[in-house]
Amino acid sequence: MNRELDVLSVGDGNLDVWMRVPRHPDRHAGGVKETGVVGDACQVGPGGAAANVAQGVARLGARAAFVGAVGDDAPGVQFANRMRAAGVDVSHLHVMTGQPTSLACMFETPDGEYEFYVCPGPRTVPAHCLEHGFIRSARILYLTGHVLTEDASTCRNMLDAMTVARESGGKVAFGPGKYWLNPALESRVHEALKHTDIIVSNDLEAEQITGRKSLHGAVEKLLEAEIGIVAVTMGSRGCLLASNGRVVEQPAFHARTASTVGAGDAFASGLLYSYLAEETLEEMAAFANAAAAIKTGTPGAAEGLPVADSVRAFLKRNG
Image (cartoon, rainbow, N blue to C red):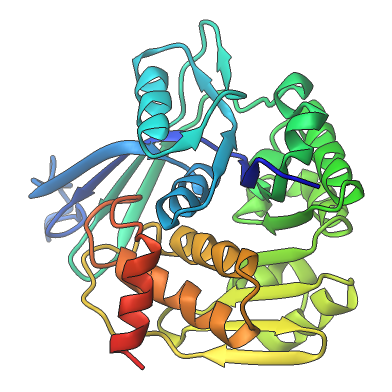
């Protein structure tokens, strides 16, 4: 099948406000809380895990689209315009009349510690935004767990999209994220795993979703669930990729860190891009790690997502 898209990313979309601050507010010895902290750098732009992956894939040179929900307010207009400028197809974006766009504020200190505040708008993704022909046009359908646990109709539409993608010969990639923020709907995430070819999570998410108390135990259980590729980020320890009984552990690259926000999304983008290029498990791990390392060198949430040539050059320099 001739597919017009490489990656169709479905999930959360926010307007992100990132600020670098010298420290987080604290209490003085007398118990009086500080009234505020002055930052020295700020970035504003489209964000959310699924939106960031769409931007990351497009930046690498692949054909990407994003489906999610924003309001018809000024932040929603800014979100859509910036996504288009990044080369992402937002023709199926759900713009909700009279509703606010989700706003995410991140305050990060120089040591990479950050506080995250979110004022979520509605994230309903109706069926018409996930039209079957549009789904079939993508080589990979990527979804995040945040929106899977939003409401029953959106969950049903996303699970249906996963089925359509696989039946048409496409692959389904899933990033569970912090799905346990709504524990009553955790069963939906486990249902999604049944339709997943590639899972991308961090180590804590992998252990949480499987109930295992060790990373290797969690990976083993995910492979037993017939997920083709299990990719797990481990922070400063790098990443682990597993497939067909093979396990590859790739150490993290040493790189200048200006912001750790969005590193996981850069990793996911790099992994999907490398997968589409039919690279080996070792090459996929290295490429994804390199994409994340490059991104952390730029302040901001989605700023610094690299182009493919930069990743290749980085890998060449770092062996």
